[in-house]
Image 1 (tube, rainbow, N blue to C red):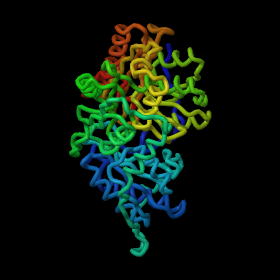
Image 2 (cartoon, rainbow, N blue to C red):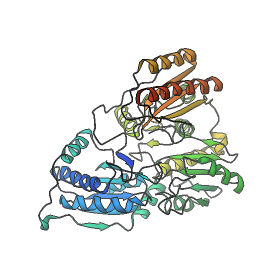
Image 3 (spheres, rainbow, N blue to C red):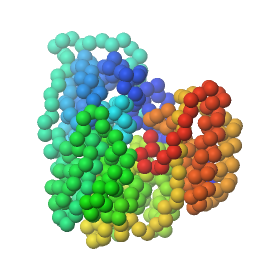
Image 4 (cartoon, rainbow, N blue to C red):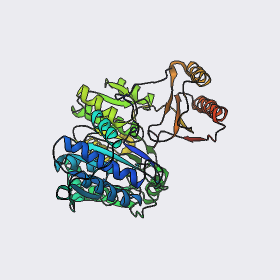
Amino acid sequence: MINDQVKPNNPLPRKYFGTDGIRGRVGVFPITAEFILKLGWAVGKVLARKGYGKVLIGKDTRISGYMFESVLEAGLSAAGVDTQLLGPMPTPAIAYLTRTLRAQAGIVISASHNPYFDNGIKFFSAQGSKLPDDIEIAIEEQLEKPMTIVDSAELGKAVRIVDAPGRYIEFCKSTVGSDITLNDLKIVVDCANGAAYHIAPSVFRELGAEVIEIGVEPNGLNINLDCGATHPEVLRQHVVLEKADLGIALDGDGDRVIMVDSEGNILDGDELLFIIAKNRQELGILHGGVIGTVMSNLGLERALQSLNIGFDRVAVGDRHIVSELKKRQWHLGGEPSGHIICLESTTTGDGIITALQVLSAMQHTQKSLSDISCGWQKYPQVLVNVKVPPEFNLSLDSVQKALKDAENELGEAGRVLLRRSGTESLVRVMVEGKDAGKVNQLANQLADVVKAEIFEESEGIGSITPSYPLGSEG
């Protein structure tokens, strides 16, 4: 059918900032203590120009978070900016608290769904949204200048916010009606040994559910390790074993969710979007259509169209979804990975709030998760990740020819997408269509061409890692 080359809303080049902040391997530039110290200082200097205001710092449960929390605090202090330390908190919680505590910005120390040896820095504006382009550019410009320290009397101070978890728990509960109770539900909650380990179980338990917790023993090294949204088969096993009504799996920073029904079926972000959109339409509260990305399943698009629900695609990344939702004054969008934006409640993906929206739909319809997820055909979709050097050129003739050949073979019955990851040194090859065998064949053929070019150009060590839409959007 088509090569969905949807252009990002933000085409301006960046030296350090990627799709979602700055991310990489701990100890490898730029994810080093020295650079993050100067990053904190640069952020502080840029924010100081906008007027005085405190900055919140939160993190997930990676062991390196201790180090980066300290140097960020030091860098901000050197620039004369006060900080409030939240400790381990989900990314969407930091966005929320940045707004409600009237901070000038929020900083998240997290590499989301990546392993413990990666880390990253993400930023939120005072409104709880991703930083505007001009601020990111100003920070990068400041990083090129020598680091200076304000006068001792003007150094920033730091305090800890001890009630941050309780504030966020109450906010999550407030996003569903007071008539919504989970008294008859048995739920398995997998927190990925990540930032939501001390929050998510409490939210569902306080709403009345019987909660079985897994992935709630972080040790700094086990975040996302064989658990959580990137490994939902673990949740599936527990749901079936416990004879639970459903399961909820978050990722390491709590901004995405994958769910499992009582029969052990895994529901990704597309399926959750369908449930929420259909229920909101039935209740008359949808407010426009749905925004997906180039990774959204073609079956979702056609299912929503059959319900007369508008659907459009943007580039991968929740900042692009949020931007398009605001432009159209719509409220709902998301990605197959489980990043779902409910813009009337949140400014970023929020796994807990998304799960609550699905549970609310179950309560309104008095149906099981399995029943409300029916009603549309999901097209077979294969994603293959190919490790590439940073300079690898996707516009090579051989790669573009293989891409066109795959598109021609699928015709209007499928899609092909070839894109560079915004968070890792990968090229992502996605193929979907009605014929699962052909989809798998074409995806691997295209990936083989990319791999062959890596070896030819750089005598490289490229490798192919097959995966599926779960946990692969970055």
